[in-house]
Image 1 (tube, helix red, strand yellow):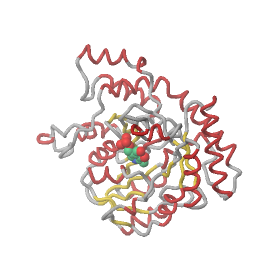
Image 2 (spheres, rainbow, N blue to C red):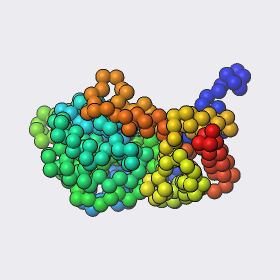
Image 3 (cartoon, rainbow, N blue to C red):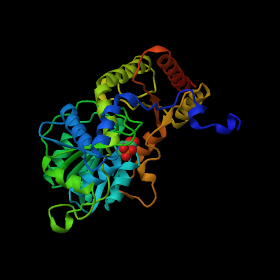
Length: 379
Ligand SMILES: Cc1ncc(COP(=O)(O)O)c(C=O)c1O
C-alpha cells in the first residue's frame, strides 16, 4: 500500500486542531493493577469513587456531590432523568449536538432558543421571554467552549418557577466555578473526552445536590431498584464510568493544574498577538477557561473559510464549531428565529491550544494560526 492510500486526517495535517492530552501509560498502571487484584472494573468501583472524591475536592462547591459518568452526554441525560421532569426542555441553538441528543435520549422534547451575540449564551431576558411562552420542565444552559459563565440570575429565574437547570459545561473542567447555593434542581456536567482539556478517553462528571446522588446513580445503572423504590427514577440506562477510565482520570488529576496553566499561557500568546486586529472578536482573559480550543469570531463566513484554507495549506487544522446551529436540525421545535446562533456558527473559527505554550511546536502553530487570521481579515 502506498503512503497516499493510507492518508488519514492525522497525516493530512502536521498539526491537528486538538491533540489529546492523555496522561502517560505508566502514570496509571499501578491503579489498574489494583483493579485487577480486586477484580472490580466498573459499577461505581473504588477508583471511580476515589476520582469522584478528588474531583469534588478540586472542583466541587461546598456541599455538592460528584458522580462520574461514561461521557458528558450520558451525564446530561442522567441529570434530566434524576430531576424527574417530563415535557419540554429549553436548550440554546449555539452548542454541540450532544446537548440536543441528551434531551432526546432522556425521552424529553427539546425546544431550541437563540443566544445573545455578546456572551454566546442565552440571556436572562430571552430566557424569561421564552419561559413566558413555553411550558418548560427544565432548561439546559450551555457554557460555550467551556467558558466560565455566571448563570446565577438564570438559575434564580428558573428555580422561582419550579424549573430544573442542567448546565452543560462540557469543555470547562479546570477553572473555578462561580459560587452559588447548591440546589437539588441544579446539575452541572463536564466532559472528559479525549479532546477535552481533562482528557481520559471517554468520561464525564456531574456535580449536583447530595439529595440527587442516589437518583443519578440509579439513572446511570438501569434504575434496577425502581420496582420497589418509587422515589427513584422509573428507568435508567448504562452510563457508568469504567475503572480503566477512572484510573486514567486519577493520573490526569495529578498533572492537570500545570496543564491548565500551560493552556492558558498558550491562549495568552494568541490574545497578545490578535486582540488589536480589527474585525476579530475573542475572549481577552485567558483565565476564563481551560481551553480545549480558542474561539475567534471572524468578520464573515468567507473570512472564516479563507483562514481555514490558508492554515491547512501550511499543515495546521483550524475548525468551525457548533455548526450548524441546532436550529438547522431536522424536525426541531424553535422558540423563535435563531439568527444570532446561525451567524455565530457561520463565523466562529477555533484555534488549536496545547498545554506546552513554549518551544518550536507552539511557535509554529501560533505563527501559522495568527498569519492565517490576519491574512483572512486583510483580504
Ligand atoms: C457543549 C457540549 N456538550 C456535550 C458534549 C458531549 O461530551 P461527551 O463527548 O463527553 O459526551 C460536548 C462534546 O464536545 C460539547 O461540546
